[in-house]
Length: 430
Ligand SMILES: *Cc1c(COP(=O)(O)O)cnc(C)c1O
Image (cartoon, rainbow, N blue to C red):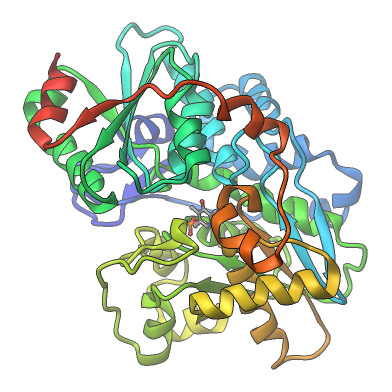
């Protein structure tokens, strides 16, 4: 399988090169040259097929010959060693829990898959790769855990000082080994700018092979298809049409769902639920795509003012606005509405949503109110314990730390403080 750059100004590359480079030389995102549907017969038998086998069937064509079948099967099994349950919250409303991995955020799957692919490519190669990533919270922990101990890969994570939760900070500063945390005096945008500068800095790239680990990287983006497959498999009633509501920030997760649909998974509609960062809902309403400076909210992993994967979604639908509108609905919700949803769901069913899942729930309810005879799944992208400050005051109960969190919360934080791009540069050149 070859990948082309959505900017169209770079040569096509293999999966391996797309993963190692992260982004094309012309700054475009990589996109697969072909999408070959899976036979409908295979999907109709989904209940008889194991998760590992399904995952392999969905990802295999995108990896192509760059990883042999046996190794890819091992990577898939190793990546997916936890569960993805759907939980009934109301009639025809299900939560897909994506937080049972090591850092309790859905980004675990993409990070673990990408790490294992890089490790595979590095087997016979002495050149080390540096994964450089900026995080507003969840990405850092998932990447740190996913890449921990992977040979030939160094991980450098930039995070904004004082702006991630205690749990998130511990998840990315306590692991050691090949993981280094840089605590930046500044906000997330500053971290992201420094990372971008480093990628363009020839002095650095001459001595270090840098790669990204955000959803721009195809190895982090594509494995997210699995969630939709596993959720669909668990539905008892497969005759009723199913819609998915995805709490969206960079739109990587929802875009992976659309790829699963392109491969033949019967999904009737996608709903992109956003917080106040309403660039996409506004676009679908007005036809003008206007990026904004990100607005801080309680669902902060979705505080994105210019979603990087949206260009991939446009590519899937041939850059045809009307076609896109047939497949995608999008709604925006305020923090107040989000808190009310957390309370309402908890009071009615005892289920505890995190703020991101609650935005997904709201999007789903808004869509279901307009159409009959559907069932819907919203994605619960993080465990509520990661957003205690927002959730506990609303439900007026305390949430106990699950084992994954207990393991890191009392460990000692180790981070290097940096104040400027020059300090990052010195660190990377050293
Ligand atoms: C990253 C993240 C999102 C947004 O996912 P995208 O793929 O960027 O749209 C939603 N919820 C949580 C908890 C996240 O960490």
